[in-house]
Image 1: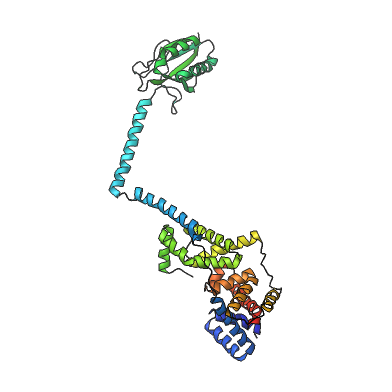
Image 2: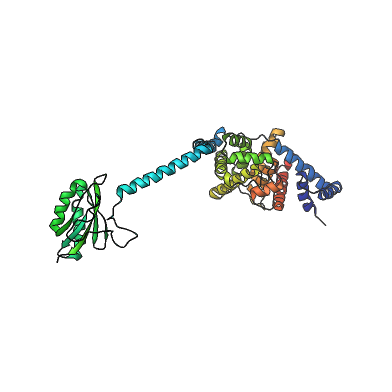
Length: 229
Length: 184
């Protein structure tokens, strides 16, 4: 059997309309027969009514300012995205994508032709394509070809010396592009050809040629280091 | 409580960051959220600050809102969590254990008043009595009385079972009944 305390919890829920039909009938029946619970029921209802009659305090109109600013910023970002990208019609969008792709391919092709160098370090082959044979210019069939062989007293030190030499001419934009085996690849500007060759000759016996005719005037030469006989 | 189709549409617009939709939601619920926060913090500045933070969180979190409760319940849940954090940080100075008898303080006030009690006085007494309630009882009572939430919604907001909500609201009424006994 339920105590009045337990009934009162149900009375409270009854006021809030939270009881099932069955529970409502049960509580209503108890309230009819129990004067104490009837009084509690009345008082609970009065408290609810009194509470609801309380004026709701007003809140500052600025309480939503920060959140609305965030909303507007997000809205503007989305609008920009929609207007600049999503507003494209499909044909326009397709055209734009194809155009961009074509421009990319052309740019890559041009760049490859411009900087293609048979003496550049190759990732696929173990050695440069045609590092010069002793005593003669190599690859003379191409304007871009400059390469040769440098005979030095100590071949084991040759690479280091050529590299240091190239760096020492840094003011003229000599850069060591790479070293593969006994061949050093150095990029030189066209105007530095003579300086470069004379410098190489100072290191050892140079056999080869430098014919800088690349579009931007600079190119990479391959210098094979061999020990002097 | 599941969302109606109109609420679904509103949620879509909120997700799309439509200022008009957000303005509508904030305008509709800001008073209630603020009042609930005031009920928890008993401090106007703190309540406004929490209310402001609650809306900011709502804007940031709308993408994660699944719509399995009403927007109102969702906003009140965010605010309730912030109030909970606030109480933890700032201490629950106004916390009154259930097994104590805080009504003595109010009783003294009532006796001191010593004049014919009108409706305005009863209201004032009610505000004081609410102030003396345990914050969890006050919150549940507030959401039921002022926000007219169902027990299930209150359970979502406060993160407790429905039966606990039922007990809390009953306890709140019982205590208010005792605190306001002098006025009857």
